[in-house]
Length: 564
Image 1 (cartoon, helix red, strand yellow):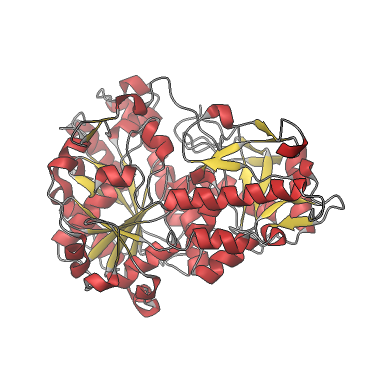
Image 2: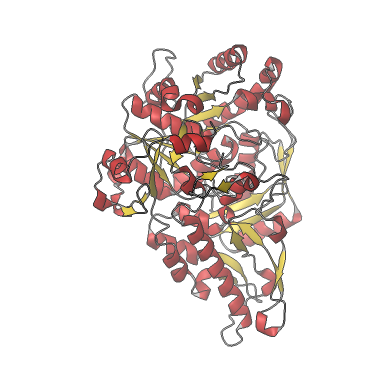
């Protein structure tokens, strides 16, 4: 069966029953129908947050189809509950861009899914819509200020960097001109659209600690400059209050369930190649308040979502992960070993061996943070015993745990061995089979107080393997502007391709010694980080030649099909 057929054949429990597993009664929930609810923020308990174990699921460099981080995260949480560990899985919400683009759905797969699958993949509880509306409200207020002669605060329209957003892949909106049609329609200027997941408002939602912090961060958004060079913030247009009002319900995490009834929290959805790529601070803290173990994931490979989770989210939120699970697949190792995408399902022992350098780099990168990696080999039907044995032996030689997990085919039952190892590592105990103790504990990669160039260079050389970093003239101008604004202390949120450890999508494996080029640097003052851009990064994706949207349909009785 397809993923959606499996999901539709599953029996969902009322959300009140899922809440009871967490010690919550029905009155504790803000209901969104029978199977979805929002969790009030007063359920977060700072003391419990300190004591629960946080498990980050990341991955090696993926194939274009992804390697199943979400599927493994869900299966691992189910497996931990099966071995007696009270566990919640905390994930991001899907963006409609990928849903209608390539993937066709982002709620896990097979017997390792979150439900209700159709609702989550489509409008869910309206969080993305709220982010979109808050973002576009600010865009409308900017153009209104430019148009209004009596209340114009002197914004230089040529410096406005705030675009509009839409939660859809639409390449034709990347660059647009607004304000055409005469004086009544505004001031003509070049503008454009980003996808909602790339909005700074989404990044802010995912880092805010409460409504006060949310409003403060929204007010700090840098939108452009006045003619005299003075920076213009969202608060200068009195935008942050209304923006926060639009986000008041979106700030609350969403409670749903997995196929086997494991509680799941889904909240926020920034991309990892251009934003921080993790769910909200509030969702993670909510999970840590309600369970003993929290499984969460970060987008794309460890070089992107994983590094940002540890260096940005954990440090802003005061979180310390207990371990990192690295999802690897035989097909991704074949791909990193040089096999074409169309051939990744064909057994190829030599390609797996060649691609192991990518897994090795990610293992080493996890250890840079003082954390013990556990490799979860996500099983596919075309994997061969010889290929699996090769990966297991390699991981053992690197001092890393490696456990095969069949979560797509078996759900939590296929992750019990993985769950046992992960729990032991998270608890700091040696296991009978491996006998290795955890490393010393979470240590950030860099000091936020270092110069911006040095922070970027540390990430590029230590995580990506670059030999040097070159800053273009445009990037150097941004560095000067960052210094003028006294924002040198902000952490770094790198924007680069997810297809390679390097900044060149064509380089597979584990390239070393290359020159990484920082093309420009964007300032996300509200979110609280700087975004160096390497390569030609797109904030508004386009649809593929055959979009997933073409196979999605709904029957007369309301049954949705085609969400894979």
